[in-house]
Length: 301
Image 1: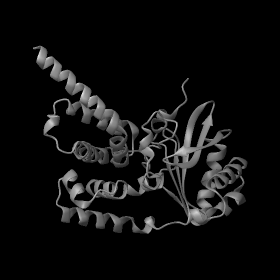
Image 2 (image 1 turned 90 degrees about the horizontal axis):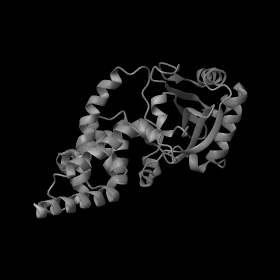
Image 3 (image 1 turned 180 degrees about the vertical axis):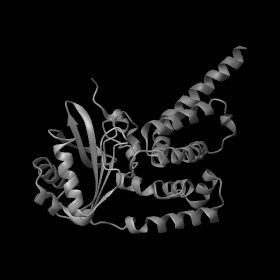
Image 4 (image 1 turned 60 degrees about the vertical axis):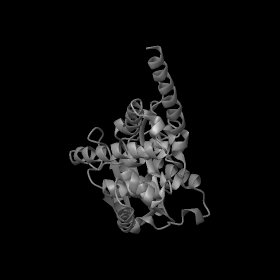
């Protein structure tokens, strides 16, 4: 009995070491797949709970084994998540990943492949296409390893990646933001100044003619039920938001999904996160109002 107990203790200690070592990687995979913090954390916890019963000495590549377990759970979760989104009120947007949240720091590696606009784009893909595209683009796994993780042949995995690229091609082009002489922070500051003053002309100068605003209130906060298209209509809605939901709100520039974005606070509570896809001017604004997607980032009361 003593030997059995000792073996269990060794196994638990080993699983604990693996948790410390691989949690950041596994969380970042699950978050990219699911777009929600709580679901990603649940997947990681379930994976390591299952590891308690695994025979570790028979696993030749622990990292690949863990990634495969997480991806399988994510693919299953994606099926039920899509059904839930069919009943979602208004547009569904991913949960913002704010730097100050108590989350694995390494989850922010490869900022381009974690950016908010990137996550929104991924929602156009099927679960399998998303899995392949994430593993290839964000983590640079080769097709053979990806095929092993998602249970498909290397040839089929290549086809899935090609299909994903074609679906995302119109949005995947480099927007040239890094070539604009004004920094992202300066542009955000200008946007905040125009937004809070309800400066219609100032806002219009910052928006592309075919700009889009997507707002997610989840039926809990009043927001547009469909994406808003065109500079004129987006400006009108921004003016309505500035004198409505966010009247008197304090704006802060913070790291969200690896980039500087805008957080709006009222009476010490986070009320909204604005994320931007930005070329020479603003292409798209993603405005998250749903309090369920902001609760992880709320200040302690």
